[in-house]
Structure formats: structure tokens, C-alpha cells
Image 1 (tube, rainbow, N blue to C red):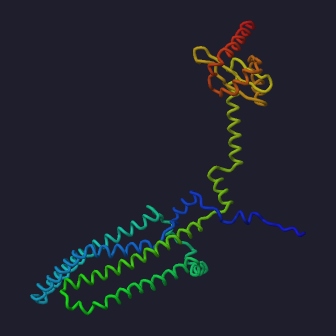
Image 2 (cartoon, rainbow, N blue to C red; image 1 turned 60 degrees about the vertical axis):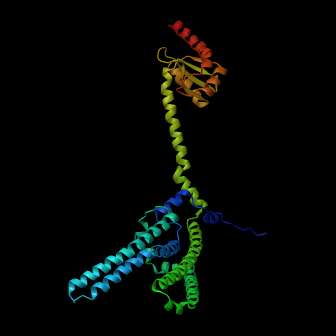
Image 3 (cartoon, rainbow, N blue to C red; image 1 turned 45 degrees about the vertical axis):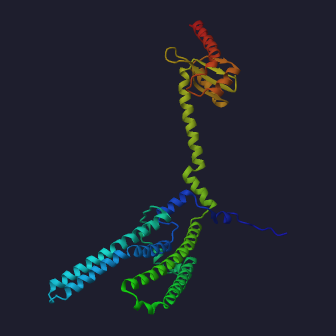
Length: 361
């Protein structure tokens, strides 16, 4: 039977894992977010027709004042430049009063449409020059990419369906279009306004459906574009947490420093309580300075041997008490005072040490 060699590293490099929060944050800083321009377009179309319908009396009144001014003043105009300038200034003022609320409303809707999709975000990364934007090969790939095909079919769909909606609305209006001449001017304007308003709402709602589909597609594309391989996730974890080898060396160095400090505190100990071979605990008590005896060093195995060797150098008494050594090692950290329940046992050991010191003296 033939043997097959499979390189598992190939699977490790496949981008199959969802992006981590850090990867998402980095993409956001670069301006890479899931958003659809169709959402803004659809909302602005809907908002535009709603604003026009809402402000239609105001717009009609401004246009009426403009026509009245023209009729009242142009009859007496003698062809001088100041009169023409006054008319144009008045016309510009009226047009500005008509356009300003519409533009402000559209700007607000456009801004909110982006905030709803991506929140408040500012990034200059997209403005930086990149060679890939002028690279013909990369440009060719973009032209025939999945995104480009989606944009093409989306544009065709919008043209066809928007054209159909407009055609259907106009065809329905042909029935009463000849009757407009029999209506008063205000009635004719109201009929035309309502017809345009209904057509605008239909187009806007249709574009909103297209925008929802496009946003789903853009979000899916974005999630696929920021996916990570297992190897990338491991590398990111190393960068965030540090390399395991470096971390182990740091911990080893920290232990060495702690052991050195502990050994430096042994000369100030009054007694070393041992197991006798497995544990060694150095205890110190300074009357008037400490509320209770304190553990200044402890260790087991090789560290216990070093503690006993250091104690021997400085002629510190070693007392063998198996149970007390084990309890002190488990319950008391270096620099802590011993628990109250161990006071009698430790006091007995210290009293024994003090008696030995008095005899030697």
C-alpha cells in the first residue's frame, strides 16, 4: 500500500478562523469596516422625498414670492444693471431658503447612515498612496473580482426595477393627465406632487431593500477578508502574551531574584525549623518590633538545603520539627506573620533557642 505525505502546515495557513478583537481593531484603524454605500443612497432618496413633501407648502410660498417679485418689478425695469442685480440677489436668496433645509436634512441623514453602520470613525489610512491602486495587474483583478461582479449586477437590477417603477407610475398617470387642464392651478400642483411623492417612496423603499441585501453581502465579504489562520492566531497570542520561552526565562529570573533576597534575610532569622530533609523555614522574632514571629525564608528540596547551609554559615540554630515545618510551609508566605494557632508551637521552639543561646554565652 503506498504511503502518502500530507503537510499539515498547509491546513494551518488556511484562513478559516473568525477574526480576533485585536484584528478587528487593526482593520478599523485602517478604515476597513463592513458598510454599504447603498444604505446611504436609499435613506437619502427616502429622506429627500419626505422632506420635499413636508416642506412643499413652504417651498411653494417661496416660489410664489419669487414670481410675484418678478412680475411686480420687471414691468418697471428700465434695463439698468442695479435693477437686474437686485432681481438676481432676491432670486438667489429665495433659492437658498428653499435648498438649505433640504440639503441640511440630506446631510444629516447621510451622516447618520454611516454612523449606524460603522459608528464614529476617522482614519487617514485610506488616503495614503498605495502602489496597488495604480498597479494594472491589481486593477485587472479588481475589475473581475466577486465584488465588481456584484456591483455590476446590482447596478443593472437598480436601473431595470427603478425604470419599471417610474414607467408604471407614469402609465397610471396618463389616465388623468388630460384632466389637469380642467382643474385649478393649486389642485393641479397637488395632484402632480402626490404622484411624484408616491413614486419617490416606491423607489426609495425598493432601494432600501437593495441596500439591506448589499449590506449583508458587504458584511459577509468583510468577515471573509479579515479571517485568520490558526498560525496567525497563535502568533497574535504570542505578541500579546509574550513568547512562552521568554516568559519562562522571566519567571526563572524572578525566582532567582526572590531566592537571593530570601537568602539575604536568613542572617536575621532566630531559628530554622526543618522537616528534617524536605522543608526548611526561617523564623524571626524581634520583640517590640513585631507583633508575632515572622517567616523570612522558606523552601523545599534544594532550596531547603541552601537555607540550612546559609544558616550554618551564620550559626543560626536549626530545630527539627516535622509537623510544624510542614504546617508553616503550607500556611505562611515569606514576610507574613505566623497564624495565631501556631503561636504556642513556635513560642516553644523560640524559647528552646533562647535557652541554648544563654547557655553558650
